[in-house]
Amino acid sequence: MRLNMVENQQNNVDSKEMIRISVSEAARLFGVNNQTIRRAIKAQEVTYVVVSGRYKLNFESLIKWSQRNITIRNKLAKRGIGQYVDRWKIKNPLYSPNPKSLSKPKAVPAE
Image (cartoon, helix red, strand yellow):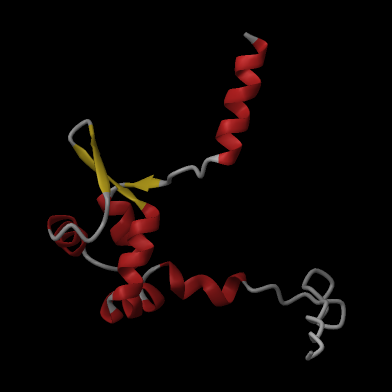
């Protein structure tokens, strides 16, 4: 029994966990209308599952969909979660990486 628990934990670490969100959550995150998300579902541009009669969208497929369409990409940046990215940047030099401490790639000698 103990061995099976360890194996299950290792399998969970190795496999990528899928994030699923609702239509309304996707609309808010991407700064678009619910109908825009529903049109993407109907056109099979995003992957989803139906849980208790509700769509649960694969977050990774939503990201890919949003980056393929320039209008959606702009709405994501202006009205969606992208509008907060500048606020998340670390401004305190104590906690941000020092450019001098970052290792530079070594040049490969030509043969």
